[in-house]
Figure: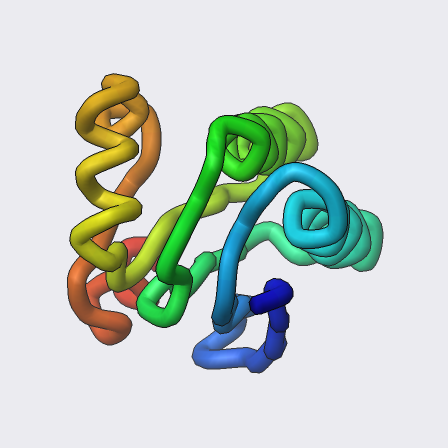
Length: 114
């Protein structure tokens, strides 16, 4: 199942609802382009909703870290929302859980940008 990305605005925060798999190839490229596009348009608050991401591989993790770094270097904030158990386990295993700001509910994630 390929990655699908839907974008929406909530209180000045751009929420990207991701669904599917973030893997080497198309999935990671889509994610990279979506984030670069947002930052290029001046988005400073980006929230990745990973609630429907059922699988992420090492390339997908690399994309998340790359997106986080790109955002930070451009003065933007990238945060994660609604991790599935699989994605949470991978982030904890790789110690990346400590790098990202991670939220379980959208309201507190949106409020954290204020």
